[in-house]
Amino acid sequence: DFRVWEDGKPVEVRYFTRDPKQPVVVGFILDASNTARLYFKTYQEAITDLAFNLLPGDNQNRGFLASYSTEPDLLVSSTRDAEPIAEKIRKLKPGGGSSMLDAIYMACTKLFAVKGEPHEPKRVLIVIGDGHDNNSKVSLEQVLEAAQRAQVVIYAVSTVGYGFSHPEEQNLVRLAEETGGRVERPLQKIHTKVSGYLSTPSDEGNYAYKVGTGQYASELAGKLYKAILDITGDITHQYVLGYTPPTPFTDGKFRSIKVELNLKNTEARLRARKGYYPPLPAGG
Image (cartoon, rainbow, N blue to C red; front, side, top):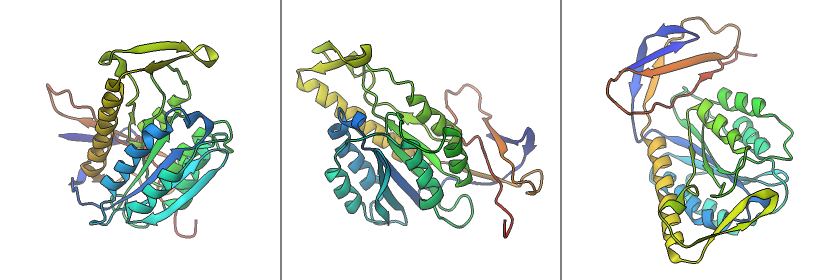
């Protein structure tokens, strides 16, 4: 059902699996900048639940936790236990500037030191933030290359609230789509099912939406829980396809990948990494 091309050349799929028990190395990166203050408490419990879902303690999965404000900060090193991650999340308080790109770059270059075949283990990064960055030293292009070289799939849980526009959220979209992940937006469009909203002017011409009913809290909890289930399902039930590259690894240049789903009359949406960098030769 799958067709694959590398640099425009068709290749034969020689390895195919979907093993929910396949080990995962997952990094959690939380926005702890000033822009996270509005919805930070809303997300704390949800991300804690996500950590326990992916690190139940009875498998080979490992995870780490980092945050970013003015500088990126590694809070919990690689562990199989979700409790230290949950404890740090509960104590984290936002404030300062935003260095999201530096945090992702740090994770991809220093925290995913994983050896082995590309399919073992999976490398996943979950970013919780709004995409805003005003203090990073690296560019979006450098971060994207680092993620592709580390063979990391990036997921994001956007904290952009309903009634706010945030152009930098597209940074999260690009990082996710280029690496085979996606962006969840649990705070968007809650108003379509919830009454009691009041719109009040906020800074820069945006409007903040506030509610005075318990229905909002209930609807938001449901949206967050669904986002967690969707990401967990994506990570634990991915198909892994492998093939022999059509040309030898000699130049180290980026190889583009195109994957198609050869099924008619289906609404399935396929997400796959857009390419990879060949491994460097020994001593390179």
